[in-house]
Length: 156
Image 1 (tube, rainbow, N blue to C red):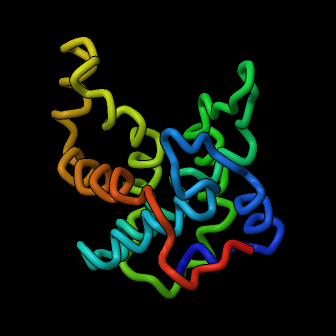
Image 2: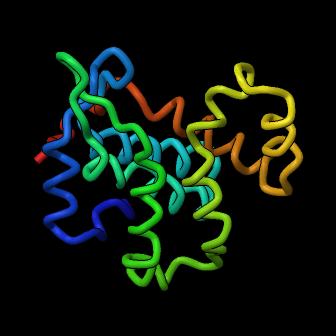
């Protein structure tokens, strides 16, 4: 899995970052990224989607905040962007990768979940974008990258 190409300290931080089970029954950020990547590979076999998967939530390790008794990750997509330029060299053997698409998907992946709640002009800005259909495929991966981990999977 591509997620395992990151340095050990990143992997360890992802495995230690537990998400609210209400939205993420797979528990950790690492598990979620792993499942999103697996869904992309198994259902689309599109390496660009898999690369988007491994970067989309990396910023959660920097954006975690506590609101009462639960953690939230407001703005994690902005934090995730900084990891792309820093670690894209780890994926030089995966071709072709359009890093502009990866950045756009990472920045907009949360918006894909709330299109029905957006004001029309904001929704049209995203739905009219040339990469919108790709974002929808990624959103499918993100939505389906939740749930129980496969039997025998060990998180750290």
